[in-house]
Length: 172
Image 1 (cartoon, one colour):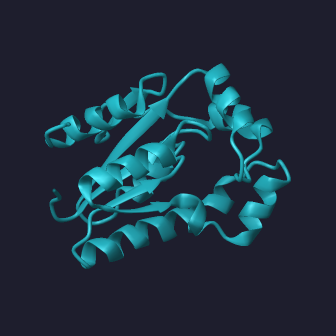
Image 2 (spheres, one colour):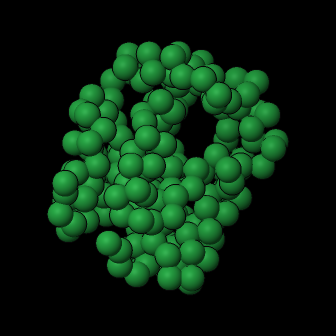
Image 3 (spheres, one colour):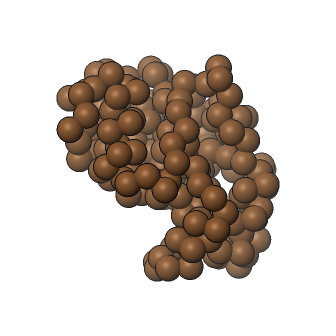
């Protein structure tokens, strides 16, 4: 169930459920998935772990690395799914340079729900104290961007089905 050179970027602030949705979509579509966090240099992770937000200069090399990974996978005949905050249009513009169709899936929700999710998860370096800076940086998808916005208060299966429908696949 795939077509050549398709990429999904599951985007949103920390705590929006990007990993859960990406894993479910990867299983359903058979596409290779990656966490954008895996592309951060150690200095970025240390900065965020200490509670310091990243700036654009921190993000550019990270975004280019993700884009290049998507391109390499496309060159090997693989469609991809990447979890990435992709908070600004300028960030998404870089990711959209990958060969083929790049579709953004913005997982959106209330600040209260996001904060609650962040407090209850474990094993992640992003502290809840950085959520306000992410929310203030977030630029919603524009109508001319290939993508859709989905409310995280919906069940994960409903979100996955909405993505599949958007891509033209038959949901379960």
